[in-house]
Length: 271
Length: 329
Image (cartoon, rainbow over all chains, first blue to last red; front, side):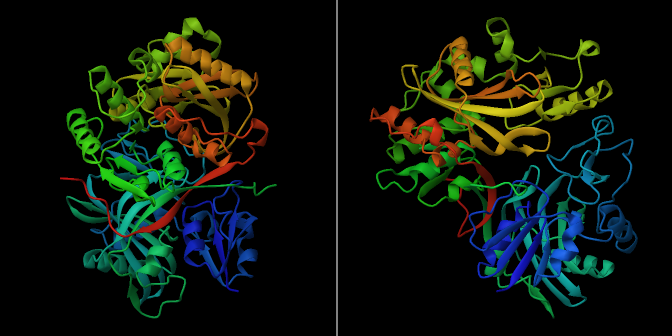
C-alpha cells in the first residue's frame, strides 16, 4: 500500500490529505500532543520532531510537509521577498525585518506562520509584539484588500507545475490558520503571476502563494513551501498534486469547499 | 430554528439533523458558516444580528414562512438581539426561553459581572480594573480584554508594564473603548454548561476542562474532557443566582489557579459552550434537554458522571459543497 508521510500533521491540511487518499496509509508526524484524525481508517500517528523528518521520509512513497518547520533550507519570507523585490518589484508587498516607524503594518512569522490572530497597526500599537514561538518576525504593509486568492500546488521545474487558484472567502486564525471557505476559480492573471514568481525563484516542491487584490492591483503577500487543506478539492478539479508534474496542469474552476467542525476522540501522542 | 451555525450550534445540528421528526432550520449572517452546509438542515442567510431592525424583520418573516415552532439562539449576538426584542415586547409565536433581562445585562458584560460579584462572591472574582489610571500598582502579568467580546477576541496577556500601552491601543482601535484589565490566573480553563428551565430551576450542569486552547496563550478550548467537579457546579449556581437567576442554557468559564487550586470566574456566556458537543459524545445531550423543556416533553436520560469518559479534539475538515447558500431577497 502506498504510504504518505505528512510532516507537521497538527495542521488542517493533514485530514484533508488523509480524506483525499483513502487507499493510502497516511502517517501523521507531529511534535504536538493532540491531533485530529484518529477516526480516519488510513491514518497512523507518530510522535516525531523535525529532526526525525529525513529518517521518516526514507520509508514513505510521498512526503508532504505541512509546516515549514519540518523543512531544511531557508524558506523565510524575508529571503524569498528580498529576491522577489529585486526580480519582480511590482508583484509583491515588501517585507521588513524591523518594525517601521510610520504607516500601518501587519506582523508575520518569517520562517512559518505566526500563530494566533494576526496583529496589525502602527508602530505604537505593535510595540509589545514579541516572538515566543521562535518563528521570527517580519513586517509587511497593511493594505485594504478586495479579495484574497491563493495559488496552491507543486512545481518540479519550469513548465512542470500542478496548480490551482482558490478564492478564499474566509479563514480562521487560531494556533493554525484554517481555510474556512473557498472556491477554485479561473484566474488567468493570478495563474500567470504565480508561475512568474515560481520561475523567478526556481521554486521546487509544494507551495502556497497568497495574493491580495488591492487598489494598486494584485500583490503577493506570502509564499510558503507547503500545500493547504485543498487536496479533496483539487482531486475533484482534476489535479493530483501528489503526482509528479510534467506539464502545467490547472485545477478546474467551480470546486467549492468549507471546513466542517469535527469532534473525535484522541489519544495523546506522547502516551 | 437555531440561530447561528457555528460553535454551540454544531451541537444542536449534530443532535437534531438526523431526526425525522424535526425540521431543522439554521440561520447565519455568514454565507460560508459551516452549519449552513450540514446534512439535514434548511439553511438561511440573514442580516447581522447587530443590524437589529433588518434582523428582526428577517426573523419574523422566516418564523411565519416556515411555521417555526421553536426558536433557539446560540451566538452571543443572536441572544443579545432576541433578549432585547423580548424586552421591547416582541411576541413571536414560538417556544423560546425568556431569561430575565436584568440578569442578561449583568452576565453579558464582563466588567458589570465582575463588579456585581465583587461584593457578593469576592473569592471567585479575579482582581479587575476598569481603565489604566492605577497601572503603576498592578501586579504583572495582567490580562486586557474587551468587555463585550467572547471567544478570545482582542485578549492580550501583558507581561511587562512597558507593554501595556500597545495592548490597550490595539483594543481601542479594533474593539472600542470598553475594556477591562484583570489579574492573570495561571492554570487550566474549565467550562460549566448549565440549563435552567422556563421557571428558572436548574435542570442540569456539566463541567468540562480544556486540554488544548484555540490560541497559544489560552482562550476557548478545542480539546478537552468532561470532569466531575460538584464544588464548581455549586459556584456556578451561586453566580447565576447572584446575577438574578436564569432561564435556558448558559455557561461559565473559569480558571483553576495552578498553585492554589482556587477557581476564578472569567466570564459568562448566555448559551451552551462552543464545544458542548462533548457532552453529547458522553451521553448527555444538552440540545435534547433544551428541546424537551421548550416542548414540555419528558427529559431524556443521561449517563451518570462516572461514565462520561470520552475526550474530544476539534478539527476543521475540508468538505466539498455543491453550491453556496444565498441571502434571501
